Length: 282
Image (cartoon, rainbow, N blue to C red; front, side):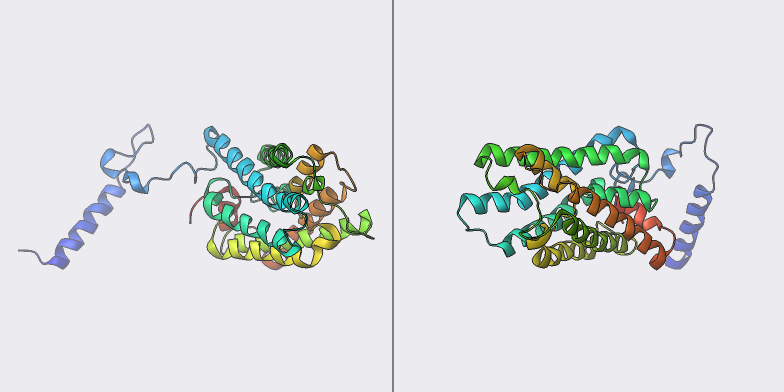
């Protein structure tokens, strides 16, 4: 009677023979060689399957809606409650929301939530340019819906949380601050995407931590938006367009600079960063 070791060797030999069998002309693997159902690649990992693109766009719209609801909502509720939401709470809340969104839907769309992030992934060649317009449109739609919800619920108060330069700060200075802040934010995102990945636990903590730290010192100066979608939604619904361009030019330029930093620090993009930008599991 063969020993346990001999049986294991025989099984490995037979499995090897089966895997080396040629596939039929239709390219499909025979049933006895198919992966078990639980091991097959789910649609969330098949980024090139365009039939599920609507799910990714919905995820981006929903995630951006939640982000803007908290980021702009803090200012709106503070105005409604006559100062009951302090500044530190208003800058911590968006960071925590970004962390939560990365955890619950990062595997669907990559949880960009920000046109500057989407553009940076495309510049870094981790994300196809042809899909950038859809992601950006979904992010803007989520922001507009959040601002519309706030206006319908609380009225047009607090400029609906629109970002604007602080007292004594010019639009050019605000754009410069947003440029530097976004360069740092996107550097963190690209760095963790090439290592821990944008959907991993370490990345979620790093990204949310950066957003909170940036807001703690820069919110009184520029609003610490770092996100064109976050700024444009409230501006559009509330009609408050003060120096709005600073919150488009600054973040996009900062994201481009961060891509340059990534090339200097890490060289060509990695496969892990592709999966982080596109959604999927490790």
